[in-house]
Every structure is written in C-alpha cells, then in structure tokens.
Image 1 (tube, helix red, strand yellow):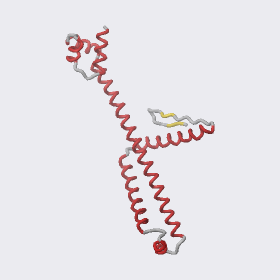
Image 2 (cartoon, rainbow, N blue to C red):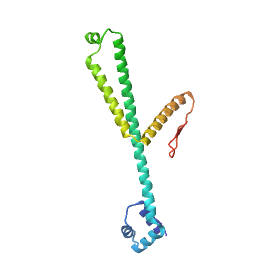
Image 3 (tube, rainbow, N blue to C red):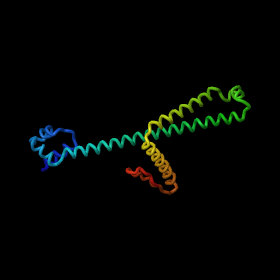
Length: 178
C-alpha cells in the first residue's frame, strides 16, 4: 500500500506519464493503470495543476498591480514637482512687469518654461497610458494598495506614539479594514 501511495503522490504532483512512472518504480504498467483509475489520479492531478495556475495568475496580477502603483506614485511625484515649478514661475511673473523683464534679468530662461510645458505634456501622456493599461480590477487593487500604504504609514506614526492600527486584507473581497 505504501508503494501505491508513493506512486499516486509522484503522479499527481509531477508530470510523468503512467508508463514512465511504472518503469521508474518497478511496478507493472497494468497495476499502475488500475491504481490510477481507482484513485482518480488524473482528476487529482488536474485539480492540483488548476490550483497552481490560479495561484500563479493571482501572483502575476498582484505583481502588475504593485508595478502600476509604483508608476502612478512616480507619476504623482513628477506631477507635484512640475506644478511647484509652474507655481514658482507664476509667482516670479507676478512680481515682475513682464516676461521680458524676467528673461533680461536672467531670472528665468525661455528654455525653462519650454521644459515645464513639455514635461507637463509628457506627464499627462504617461497618466493616460497607465490608465489605459489598467483594468477595473487593477484600479481597485491600486486603490486598496494605496490605502494599505497610508494605513501602514499611520500605524508607524502612531506606533511611536503608542497607538495601534491594524491592516487586514481579505483575499476574497479584497477589502481593507482599520
């Protein structure tokens, strides 16, 4: 009976054909075939393979969501930097009589403005491309990951103050709770 259990385990967790399994274990092929039919090994192997594929697909989706979240975070940071640069330019213009005065004094070069305008355009294109890559599920996962990150940051901040925040992610519903 131990040999039968070992053969079943090797078959359902591996990729070996029954004939090869019989030969490697020194068991007649007819015996291995009978054991396979009686124990429904083919069905068990398919179930294990299906679970493995589902797990791999889930991991791939999670990896994609993490990568998209990083891209969005970088995009947000770039956008914030560009907005600050544009605001600084606007403030400089408000204190001067004209753009010509800024250019003559060397406080701001026309190239700087062109760089800001081009960067803002590239930023907008980047956001559209990222958005186009995402499915609704990706967007929901990213929102959850961002929320989880904020909760973890809050937990770290409150941990120093003695407070506690617990982050729980339900795999089925993919809902975060505090």
